[in-house]
Image 1 (cartoon, rainbow, N blue to C red):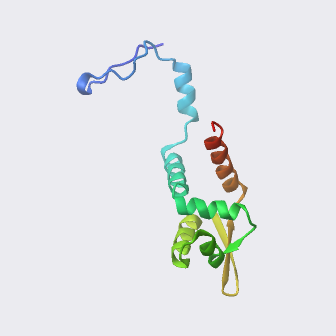
Image 2 (cartoon, one colour):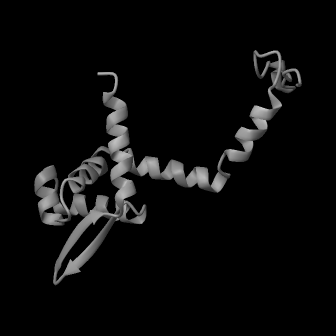
Image 3 (spheres, rainbow, N blue to C red):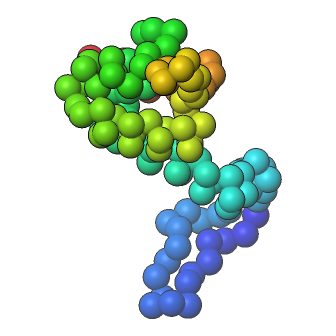
Length: 128
């Protein structure tokens, strides 16, 4: 076990602990995703973090699929605004679409998207 190091920059102490638990630190470092994966995860949560996009995802959780016109009516937004948000969600692989003639139907990309939202919902309501 090593003593906590002091940073040379401004002589600020890095940690208030007296010792480093090398086995724990090594395990955490080995199990932390690489920078690329962490960036992708951060971007995923940024996409989900938009209120309109969350409303779209929550709406699509309740139905098998829905067209842009119906989504815009449910959300009280223009078709153009909803289409833009759907494009962002598609690029993040959160929704998928199928075309029937001129009508485009959107649905959640897979069960994991629903699980992400459900777990978040449970988390924010567990202390109420």
